[in-house]
Each structure stands twice: as C-alpha cells, then as structure tokens.
Image: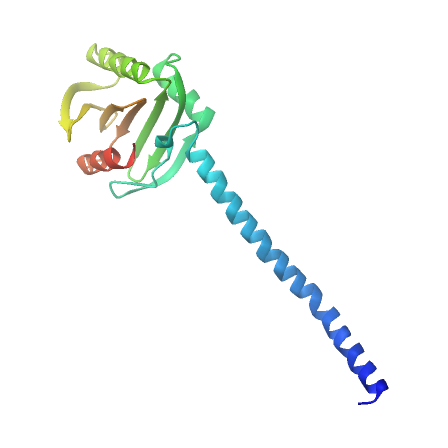
Length: 188
C-alpha cells in the first residue's frame, strides 16, 4: 500500500468515526442518564419508605390482594393524622395509603409503645362514648393480636397497635377479613 493510499484510508476512517461519534456519545449519555435516574429513584423510594428509624413504615404495595393507588407520607401524613385526632399525640412518623375499592390504611408511629397505647386507649374511650361517626365498638383476637372493630362511613373499620405503631384500616366492602389478614401480615 502506498503512503498516499494509507493516508487517504486513515482520513476516511477518521471522517467516519467523527460522523458516528456524536450518535454513539448521545446514546451512551442516554444510557448513563437512565441508569442514574433508576438508581436515584430506587434510593429515594427506599429513603421515603423508611422515614424515621423504624422499617415498619414501609408502605406495602399490596394488602390482601388490593393494590396501593396513592400514598401520603412524611410531614403531610403527620399533619393529616394529627387533624384526625384533634391534638398532638406524639407521632414521629406516619403514612396514609389508599388502596383499591375505597380501602384506606392510616399508620401512626408514636415516640414509644406507651404513647401508642395511650393513643389506642384514647380512641377506644372516644368511640365508646359515642363521640364521632363510628359505632358498634367490638374487640376480637386474630392470631394473638387484639383488634378493635367499628362500623361507620359506610365501611367496617379495624384498628390495633403493633409496638409503637397504631394502625387503622377502612376495609373494602366484601373483602373486610381478607384486607385485615393482609394488613396484619404486611404492616409490621
């Protein structure tokens, strides 16, 4: 091969590389951006689900076969939970999950088990006294867990305490027991 032919071939390869480089560069940049976004979203979700030091604040995507459709977390959830109770009850974290067929879960994390017990007792006293839209307060035992159940607002509701958590469920019509069993398994 002559030096002129070799030089021409080298120029041709350089020109071809220059033409392909922008496309390859942007494709690589897009792949890197997608990977960074996926990792960032995963880390953000993990951080949000573990608000506070209690991993029990992870929001289940499915309870008793009912899929999560929306969730309120962090300060917004704490504000809404405080409004429901009408006072500051020592909540450190919480979430509100909306599930299919009008099912809703409210989870409040108290500063201690004693505070959670006080909240549960306060709820029982208010409901038992007829204060509010809930009636027919009953207590039952499900797999060793004390559960309180009431009727109101067109639904059956369940509430109970697990450690520092106080959990309230508005169960879907026709799936009440399945939703309760799923919540007892999924929310810990």
